[in-house]
Structure formats: structure tokens, C-alpha cells
Image 1 (spheres, rainbow, N blue to C red):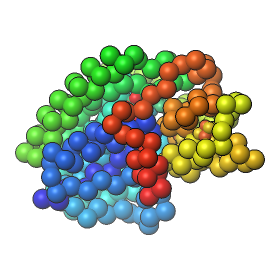
Image 2 (tube, helix red, strand yellow):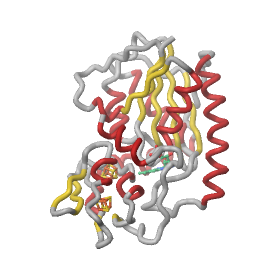
Image 3 (tube, rainbow, N blue to C red):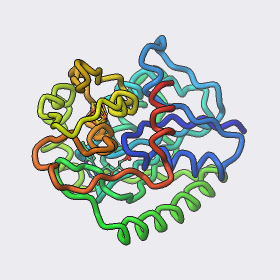
Image 4 (tube, rainbow, N blue to C red):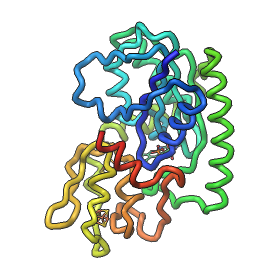
Length: 265
Ligand SMILES: Cc1cc2nc3c(=O)[nH]c(=O)nc-3n(C[C@H](O)[C@H](O)[C@H](O)COP(=O)(O)O)c2cc1C
Ligand code: SF4
Ligand code: SF4
């Protein structure tokens, strides 16, 4: 059975999970969903089994992932699953949101299974990155989860979380405001004198939201707030809010070259 996994990633966690699943499931293809922005609607996957792997943003889906899901027709797909990567908790809220979008979408077909995996948090606007040791422990546990999820996907398990009252409340309180302002939220970003005009921020942005103007990044207000530009700048020259002095995070197995490559697709 062929599997197609659509994913979105800023700092590599979701890509690492998608890669791990693909390896273990076999006969599997990975596709960055940001590359399908120009595709005609509906998007009809050429695979019997489809996965959607995404980070959690404010107890919900990144705006680009919900837009993508609205265009996806899964009516001819035998098995559909999703995996949400998150720094803390609340993945069930994004899975319930995705389910709602899919059943009301062109294919009128929801998820067979939904899973969440705790990964290192990358929301540097709110907190510092964890230390090396904690990151390693978190990633080891995540690897075990990927293995378990791949087994379940291979055997076609049906497993969806319900809305927990806590997750529903936080989603309701925080998510709509986040989504409303997300594309413009790059107005908070600024570059300092450490910038070497290396172009990395331009190349890693998954939605082409940055260009260099006189050697300095300029943001174009279609931001997804994925944090890739801030986290991957080699000289830590991009700041927003309290990011000065905070440690930068990228999944250790997903190199900058891989993130550039997938952003180009
Ligand atoms: C804008 C934004 C909002 C986030 N909100 C949440 C959240 O509500 N709950 C949570 O557990 N993690 C949250 N995170 C952390 C990410 O979901 C987590 O680190 C994820 O694994 C990052 O995936 P990526 O490396 O593939 O981009 C947030 C991250 C960002 C950038
Ligand atoms: S990644 Fe950093 S150093 Fe390179 S161009 Fe962007 S801001 Fe400048
Ligand atoms: S501008 Fe930065 S935070 Fe916004 S989508 Fe691009 S890489 Fe992500």
C-alpha cells in the first residue's frame, strides 16, 4: 500500500517525525504541503494511505495547514492519519480541528487516527530553548513514539482523541487571535548588525516570506510564525520580543541544508 505524508515544519521536528514514519512504514513519499499552495483545488492524493504531520500552534493548526486541509479530497483514500508535534500539550485540539475541516471539505472524509508527540518546544518568542540533555531525552522518547505510531498506522488502527475540556478552552481563547494576526506578525521581527547577508533566512522560510534588501532581510507579511528564520540564522541576528540571549533550536538530525531544500520545493 502506498503512503503519502504531507508535512509542514519550521525547525525540523515535524519533518524528523514524518521521515521516521516513512522509513518505518515503507513504500512512502514525503511532500512539504507548502509546495502545494499554487496547486488547483481540490488536491487529490495519489496514494491509498495519507498522513498529515504538523506542529501545534496555540492549541491549533498552523494557518497554512488548515488552508491545505480545506482543499484536500480524501474520499478515495483507504486510511488517513495525522501526527501533531508539540512542545507541551494540546495536540488533541489540533486533531479535532483537522477532523472538522476534513469532514466538511471536498472529500467529506475525516481521520481514521490521530496522534500527538512531545518534542522540544521551538516558540522562542515565548521561552528559551531547553538544555542539550533535556532535548536529547525528549527526542529519544519521541523516537519511541514514532515507532509505536508507525506500527499502528501499518496495522490500520482507528484511534482518535476527543476534545478535552481544557484543550477546547485554550483553543477557543487563544487560537482565533493567533490566526487572525499570523501573517502580519513578522512586523515584530528585526535584524541587528550581526547580519552577514548570508541569505539563510530567505532560503529556509517555507513560504517565501523573506527577501534581502541591501543585504538585510525584509519580511513580506505572509508569515506563518514557524520561527525558522529566527532559529536558523547562523549569527542570531534576527530578534523579536525577548529573543535576544535565548538559545536557538533546530532538530539535530535535520540540517539547515535539508530545511533549505524542502523550502525550495
Ligand atoms: C507559533 C507557535 C505556537 C506554538 N504553540 C504551541 C502550543 O500551543 N502548544 C505546544 O505544546 N507547543 C507549541 N509550539 C511548539 C511547537 O508546536 C513544537 O516545538 C513543534 O514540534 C515545532 O515543530 P517544527 O520543528 O516542525 O516546526 C508552538 C510553536 C510555535 C512556533
Ligand atoms: S540568516 Fe541571519 S545573517 Fe543570514 S541574511 Fe538572514 S539575518 Fe542575515
Ligand atoms: S518569515 Fe520566518 S517565521 Fe515567518 S514563515 Fe518565514 S521563516 Fe517562518
